[in-house]
Image (cartoon, rainbow, N blue to C red; front, side, top):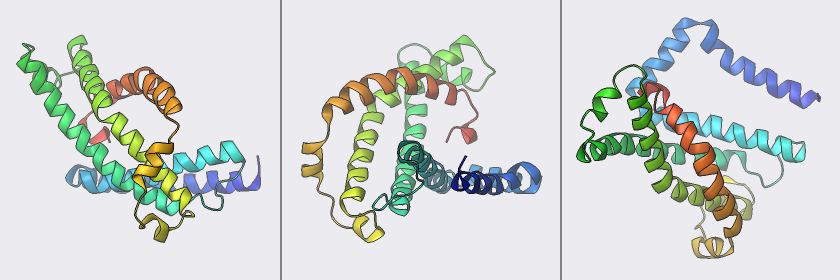
Length: 207
């Protein structure tokens, strides 16, 4: 393990440790998260999703940052994507239950307020399938476009604010990978089951 890895892991421990050691810190977090879900979605995705990309870069290149990678622009983009993800969770949670009720499963909303059951698992699965089939492809494509824009503009905040060449980027996307791997494999085989589990959790822990 390299020195940078030790520093990175130490920084993560120091950042998250107060939430486990001091009940007041965790209580303040849960209270604010419950009262301001959209704000916290921005913050959590800006930090955690960007952290995931940094770890991915470390695995791929051996470095936690690189010229043009654009950690701050990626954090900003992930923050706004986090807002859309929270929005999608709210819309598809209530909308899917309304649709299931419309189709004859009138207790769909009630079972989601109860303990675990096969009926609750079914409703959670339906929410996940509807959301990931309709919203996820759009979000994933938008994320790919913004990633490309960040790289094309040198990974700077100023570059992020320049107009995005949607037409050029979309035209040159690797649609073979986007369709055959991202859409056809990650959505049904990972995101369907992952978000089924997510929708079984209390609302405050879903995003």
